[in-house]
Amino acid sequence: MSLPAPLAAAGLSPQAPPPLIELDRATVVRGQATVLDALTLRIVAGQHTALLGPNGCGKSTFIKLINRELYPLAREGEAPVKVMGQQRWVVNELRTRLGVVTGDLTRDLQDMPHLDVETAVLTGFFASFMLPPDAEVSKPMRERAREALQRVGAGALIARQVAEISTGEMRRVLIARALVHQPQALLLDEPTAGLDLVAQRDFLQLLKELAGQGITLVLVTHHIEEIVAEIDRVILLRDGGVYADGDRASTLTSENLSTVFGGELAVRREGERYFATSA
Image (cartoon, rainbow, N blue to C red):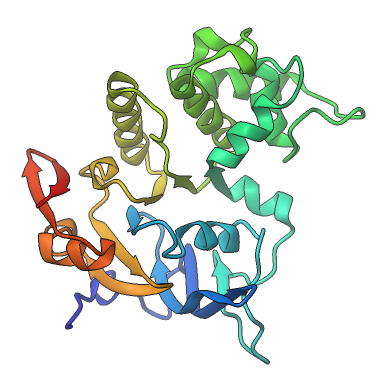
Protein backbone atom coordinates (compact mmCIF):
# COMPACT_ATOMS: atom_id res chain seq x y z
CA MET A 1 0.00 0.00 0.00
CA SER A 2 1.44 3.36 -1.02
CA LEU A 3 1.07 5.84 1.84
CA PRO A 4 0.87 9.65 1.66
CA ALA A 5 3.93 11.56 2.80
CA PRO A 6 2.79 14.49 4.98
CA LEU A 7 6.16 14.69 6.64
CA ALA A 8 7.91 15.67 3.44
CA ALA A 9 5.21 18.27 2.88
CA ALA A 10 5.92 19.64 6.35
CA GLY A 11 9.19 21.02 4.98
CA LEU A 12 11.50 19.66 7.67
CA SER A 13 15.08 20.77 7.20
CA PRO A 14 18.26 20.89 9.27
CA GLN A 15 17.31 24.44 10.28
CA ALA A 16 13.79 23.52 11.37
CA PRO A 17 13.03 23.13 15.09
CA PRO A 18 12.98 19.54 16.31
CA PRO A 19 9.73 17.62 15.94
CA LEU A 20 7.27 17.87 18.79
CA ILE A 21 7.14 14.07 18.97
CA GLU A 22 9.49 11.67 17.22
CA LEU A 23 9.39 7.87 17.38
CA ASP A 24 12.10 5.94 15.56
CA ARG A 25 11.30 2.21 15.41
CA ALA A 26 9.99 2.29 18.98
CA THR A 27 9.12 -1.16 20.29
CA VAL A 28 7.27 -1.92 23.51
CA VAL A 29 6.77 -5.42 24.85
CA ARG A 30 4.41 -6.07 27.76
CA GLY A 31 4.43 -9.61 29.05
CA GLN A 32 4.57 -11.85 25.99
CA ALA A 33 2.89 -9.30 23.69
CA THR A 34 4.56 -6.79 21.38
CA VAL A 35 2.31 -3.76 21.84
CA LEU A 36 4.24 -1.36 19.61
CA ASP A 37 6.20 -2.92 16.80
CA ALA A 38 9.02 -0.66 15.52
CA LEU A 39 6.64 2.32 15.39
CA THR A 40 8.04 5.28 13.46
CA LEU A 41 6.35 8.66 13.19
CA ARG A 42 6.97 12.39 13.56
CA ILE A 43 4.64 15.17 14.59
CA VAL A 44 5.82 18.75 14.25
CA ALA A 45 4.58 21.77 16.18
CA GLY A 46 1.47 23.26 14.60
CA GLN A 47 0.58 19.98 12.88
CA HIS A 48 -2.72 19.02 14.52
CA THR A 49 -2.77 15.23 14.39
CA ALA A 50 -5.12 12.36 15.25
CA LEU A 51 -3.98 8.82 15.99
CA LEU A 52 -6.90 6.54 15.24
CA GLY A 53 -7.32 2.83 15.73
CA PRO A 54 -9.20 0.07 17.55
CA ASN A 55 -8.66 -1.02 21.12
CA GLY A 56 -5.39 -2.90 21.42
CA CYS A 57 -3.66 -1.20 18.49
CA GLY A 58 -1.14 0.63 20.70
CA LYS A 59 -2.80 4.02 21.24
CA SER A 60 -2.63 3.96 25.04
CA THR A 61 0.94 2.70 24.93
CA PHE A 62 1.85 5.60 22.64
CA ILE A 63 0.51 8.06 25.24
CA LYS A 64 2.41 6.35 28.05
CA LEU A 65 5.63 6.50 26.00
CA ILE A 66 5.29 10.23 25.45
CA ASN A 67 4.24 10.84 29.05
CA ARG A 68 7.19 8.76 30.33
CA GLU A 69 5.00 6.18 32.04
CA LEU A 70 6.50 3.48 29.81
CA TYR A 71 9.83 3.14 28.03
CA PRO A 72 10.66 1.37 24.76
CA LEU A 73 13.16 -1.41 24.32
CA ALA A 74 16.60 0.19 24.45
CA ARG A 75 18.89 0.21 21.42
CA GLU A 76 22.53 1.01 22.05
CA GLY A 77 23.46 4.51 20.92
CA GLU A 78 19.96 5.29 19.60
CA ALA A 79 16.93 7.18 20.91
CA PRO A 80 13.65 5.50 19.94
CA VAL A 81 11.56 8.28 21.52
CA LYS A 82 12.20 12.02 21.54
CA VAL A 83 9.88 14.77 22.72
CA MET A 84 10.74 18.29 21.53
CA GLY A 85 14.13 17.01 20.44
CA GLN A 86 15.11 15.53 23.80
CA GLN A 87 15.43 11.87 24.74
CA ARG A 88 15.61 12.49 28.49
CA TRP A 89 13.27 14.67 30.48
CA VAL A 90 12.55 15.44 34.08
CA VAL A 91 8.91 14.35 34.02
CA ASN A 92 7.64 17.43 35.86
CA GLU A 93 9.39 19.69 33.36
CA LEU A 94 8.00 17.75 30.41
CA ARG A 95 4.47 18.19 31.70
CA THR A 96 4.91 21.96 31.73
CA ARG A 97 5.60 21.83 27.97
CA LEU A 98 3.17 19.13 26.91
CA GLY A 99 -0.28 19.09 28.50
CA VAL A 100 -1.78 15.62 28.86
CA VAL A 101 -5.51 14.95 29.33
CA THR A 102 -6.46 11.32 30.00
CA GLY A 103 -9.22 9.34 31.65
CA ASP A 104 -6.72 8.06 34.22
CA LEU A 105 -6.05 11.63 35.30
CA THR A 106 -9.79 12.20 35.74
CA ARG A 107 -10.07 9.22 38.08
CA ASP A 108 -6.95 10.16 40.03
CA LEU A 109 -8.21 13.67 40.74
CA GLN A 110 -11.76 12.57 41.53
CA ASP A 111 -10.35 10.14 44.09
CA MET A 112 -8.79 13.01 46.04
CA PRO A 113 -11.05 13.83 49.03
CA HIS A 114 -12.48 17.37 49.34
CA LEU A 115 -10.65 18.59 46.22
CA ASP A 116 -12.19 21.73 44.75
CA VAL A 117 -11.82 22.77 41.12
CA GLU A 118 -9.47 25.69 41.74
CA THR A 119 -7.11 23.47 43.74
CA ALA A 120 -7.30 20.75 41.08
CA VAL A 121 -6.10 23.26 38.49
CA LEU A 122 -3.39 24.55 40.81
CA THR A 123 -2.02 21.01 41.23
CA GLY A 124 -0.92 21.30 37.62
CA PHE A 125 1.89 23.58 38.75
CA PHE A 126 3.25 20.78 40.94
CA ALA A 127 2.53 17.76 38.68
CA SER A 128 0.64 16.11 41.54
CA PHE A 129 -2.93 15.16 42.42
CA MET A 130 -3.00 17.30 45.55
CA LEU A 131 -1.09 20.35 46.72
CA PRO A 132 2.10 19.24 48.47
CA PRO A 133 2.18 20.20 52.18
CA ASP A 134 5.03 22.65 51.57
CA ALA A 135 3.58 24.09 48.36
CA GLU A 136 3.67 27.86 48.03
CA VAL A 137 0.78 28.98 45.85
CA SER A 138 1.52 32.48 44.67
CA LYS A 139 -0.95 35.13 43.60
CA PRO A 140 0.21 34.84 39.92
CA MET A 141 -0.45 31.07 40.10
CA ARG A 142 -4.01 31.66 41.29
CA GLU A 143 -4.53 34.27 38.58
CA ARG A 144 -3.29 31.91 35.88
CA ALA A 145 -5.49 29.09 37.21
CA ARG A 146 -8.55 31.33 37.09
CA GLU A 147 -7.63 32.64 33.64
CA ALA A 148 -7.26 29.05 32.39
CA LEU A 149 -10.68 28.11 33.76
CA GLN A 150 -12.23 31.14 32.08
CA ARG A 151 -10.42 30.27 28.84
CA VAL A 152 -12.10 26.87 28.68
CA GLY A 153 -15.50 28.13 29.77
CA ALA A 154 -15.32 26.67 33.27
CA GLY A 155 -14.90 29.78 35.39
CA ALA A 156 -18.20 29.19 37.17
CA LEU A 157 -16.89 25.86 38.50
CA ILE A 158 -14.03 27.31 40.51
CA ALA A 159 -15.46 26.62 43.98
CA ARG A 160 -17.16 23.32 43.14
CA GLN A 161 -15.93 19.97 44.41
CA VAL A 162 -14.28 17.87 41.70
CA ALA A 163 -16.30 14.83 42.79
CA GLU A 164 -19.55 16.71 42.10
CA ILE A 165 -19.00 17.99 38.56
CA SER A 166 -20.04 16.25 35.35
CA THR A 167 -17.73 14.36 33.00
CA GLY A 168 -17.87 17.16 30.43
CA GLU A 169 -17.07 19.77 33.07
CA MET A 170 -14.18 17.63 34.30
CA ARG A 171 -12.67 17.51 30.81
CA ARG A 172 -12.61 21.31 30.75
CA VAL A 173 -11.01 21.41 34.20
CA LEU A 174 -8.29 19.00 33.03
CA ILE A 175 -7.52 21.17 30.03
CA ALA A 176 -7.40 24.25 32.27
CA ARG A 177 -4.98 22.35 34.52
CA ALA A 178 -2.76 21.69 31.51
CA LEU A 179 -3.02 25.27 30.22
CA VAL A 180 -1.65 26.92 33.38
CA HIS A 181 1.84 26.23 31.98
CA GLN A 182 0.96 27.64 28.56
CA PRO A 183 2.07 24.37 26.93
CA GLN A 184 3.13 24.07 23.32
CA ALA A 185 0.81 21.14 22.75
CA LEU A 186 -2.03 19.11 24.23
CA LEU A 187 -2.10 15.30 24.11
CA LEU A 188 -5.72 14.19 24.43
CA ASP A 189 -6.80 10.60 25.04
CA GLU A 190 -10.41 9.80 24.07
CA PRO A 191 -11.50 13.25 25.27
CA THR A 192 -15.24 12.86 24.63
CA ALA A 193 -15.61 9.43 26.26
CA GLY A 194 -18.60 9.50 28.59
CA LEU A 195 -19.96 12.82 27.33
CA ASP A 196 -23.57 13.26 26.25
CA LEU A 197 -24.31 14.69 22.81
CA VAL A 198 -24.48 18.35 23.91
CA ALA A 199 -21.35 18.08 26.07
CA GLN A 200 -19.54 16.38 23.18
CA ARG A 201 -20.54 19.18 20.79
CA ASP A 202 -19.39 21.86 23.22
CA PHE A 203 -16.12 20.07 23.91
CA LEU A 204 -15.28 19.69 20.23
CA GLN A 205 -15.94 23.42 19.80
CA LEU A 206 -13.42 24.04 22.60
CA LEU A 207 -10.83 21.94 20.73
CA LYS A 208 -11.39 24.02 17.60
CA GLU A 209 -10.84 27.21 19.59
CA LEU A 210 -7.64 25.90 21.20
CA ALA A 211 -6.29 24.87 17.80
CA GLY A 212 -6.97 28.38 16.54
CA GLN A 213 -4.98 29.79 19.48
CA GLY A 214 -1.77 28.08 18.36
CA ILE A 215 -1.82 25.04 20.66
CA THR A 216 -0.90 21.89 18.77
CA LEU A 217 -3.48 19.16 19.28
CA VAL A 218 -2.49 15.49 19.32
CA LEU A 219 -5.71 13.49 19.59
CA VAL A 220 -5.67 9.77 20.36
CA THR A 221 -9.03 8.14 19.70
CA HIS A 222 -11.09 5.40 18.10
CA HIS A 223 -13.98 7.78 17.27
CA ILE A 224 -13.59 9.53 13.92
CA GLU A 225 -16.31 12.05 14.81
CA GLU A 226 -13.88 13.56 17.35
CA ILE A 227 -11.52 14.62 14.56
CA VAL A 228 -12.38 18.30 14.12
CA ALA A 229 -11.60 20.07 10.85
CA GLU A 230 -8.51 21.75 12.30
CA ILE A 231 -6.95 18.27 12.65
CA ASP A 232 -6.03 17.40 9.08
CA ARG A 233 -3.42 14.71 9.62
CA VAL A 234 -4.66 11.27 10.58
CA ILE A 235 -2.43 8.32 11.46
CA LEU A 236 -4.19 4.95 11.41
CA LEU A 237 -2.66 2.40 13.77
CA ARG A 238 -2.97 -1.34 13.40
CA ASP A 239 -1.21 -4.08 15.37
CA GLY A 240 1.26 -1.67 16.94
CA GLY A 241 2.35 0.00 13.70
CA VAL A 242 1.30 2.65 11.18
CA TYR A 243 -1.18 1.39 8.59
CA ALA A 244 -1.88 4.73 6.87
CA ASP A 245 -0.81 8.34 7.33
CA GLY A 246 -2.23 11.33 5.51
CA ASP A 247 -4.90 14.01 5.42
CA ARG A 248 -8.45 13.29 6.52
CA ALA A 249 -9.85 12.89 3.01
CA SER A 250 -7.30 10.32 1.89
CA THR A 251 -7.08 8.42 5.18
CA LEU A 252 -10.63 8.31 6.54
CA THR A 253 -12.00 5.99 3.86
CA SER A 254 -14.34 3.04 4.19
CA GLU A 255 -11.64 0.71 2.91
CA ASN A 256 -8.98 1.90 5.37
CA LEU A 257 -11.22 1.87 8.41
CA SER A 258 -12.73 -1.51 7.56
CA THR A 259 -9.23 -2.98 7.42
CA VAL A 260 -7.97 -1.28 10.57
CA PHE A 261 -11.03 -2.06 12.70
CA GLY A 262 -11.51 -5.54 11.28
CA GLY A 263 -15.09 -5.19 10.07
CA GLU A 264 -17.09 -3.61 7.26
CA LEU A 265 -17.51 0.11 7.91
CA ALA A 266 -19.01 2.86 5.78
CA VAL A 267 -17.54 6.34 6.16
CA ARG A 268 -19.58 9.41 5.38
CA ARG A 269 -18.81 13.10 5.57
CA GLU A 270 -21.26 15.70 6.87
CA GLY A 271 -19.86 19.20 6.47
CA GLU A 272 -16.57 19.30 8.39
CA ARG A 273 -17.05 16.01 10.25
CA TYR A 274 -16.63 12.35 9.40
CA PHE A 275 -18.71 9.48 10.73
CA ALA A 276 -18.46 5.69 10.45
CA THR A 277 -21.26 3.16 10.63
CA SER A 278 -21.48 -0.58 10.11
CA ALA A 279 -21.81 -1.33 6.41
